[in-house]
Length: 413
Image (cartoon, rainbow, N blue to C red; front, side):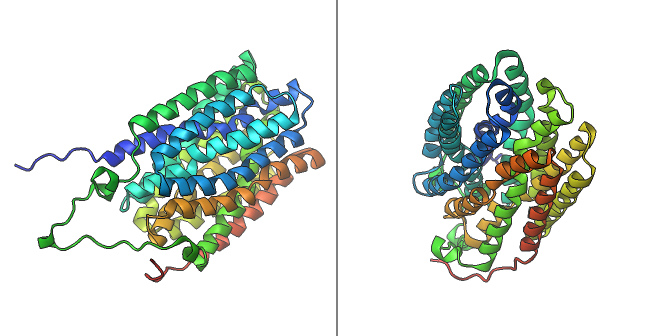
């Protein structure tokens, strides 16, 4: 009788990463939930807050270069532990911001650092290190975490801010989120399967009589970043985020512009985030089955069409809900596949560093999105023109992904 195999510990890692991903990203998107209340409480304009949102993304882009390297060098567990501590500090200080410079420092700097250590880069890199065959599905699940968190917590945060004020809401939730991240990192997260005496996907080590384990190609960073596939991935990941980050930062405010009450406007974030989560998981599974570079452009084409609809057709709350659903689904279909594709092309060893570099472009270039959307809203009086700009960004990213060609198995260490 064959002995029943225990559950591969990598799936516990996925569960832990999912929890951290749900909570860590909220340090960036709290201003989305609080935006109407911050505007009405202070004399801060949309452009002032939009600059803070863009600053946070720009600095996040710098910080992920550090966090990606930390995952590769000191391990995911220590990276998340430090990130949880900074999360508490950032949220607590953010709740006390009274002037623009404090908003820029507490939200734009500290929370950007916290998010860089608890959000996409370390989470996706850790998942990719534990899985190879199921990498797309796993990064799809963990990549959906922030969307699930936004879908659940942003409406709650909007409601709490309406009833208790955004400052008290930020103070209490920030402490709870940071402590949870620290506990999960300490008790669940492990760095790699090899560090726990395991192999990726839970595969059994091959004995000498059955041959040796396959050798995985591992590229050095400086060589990988000069290849055309990496450059095209960098372009696609950077450019589409101009449209994405602008829309994500302003979707709640767009809803209030169209007549939605402040207390319930968080539903537009849910309409954006929930399909994103579905798209991430579906895109990960489809990418493993049919090829990542085949699935990713489909998601971006859906986003391009949706943003064109946003330019021409969004003039009511219902049409904004339709736009949010389509953009969330399309973005989700492709976004979780960048890390698995990096691992396929360049190996697992330095996937954290390589994804950190991709995310540097994502933030440095894509970080203009919230500020650009705020400026276009101020000038035109509505968000429809900003949606057209987003459509162009998604279209450029689509073309870049279509140009990626398979790599030759050379260029490693």
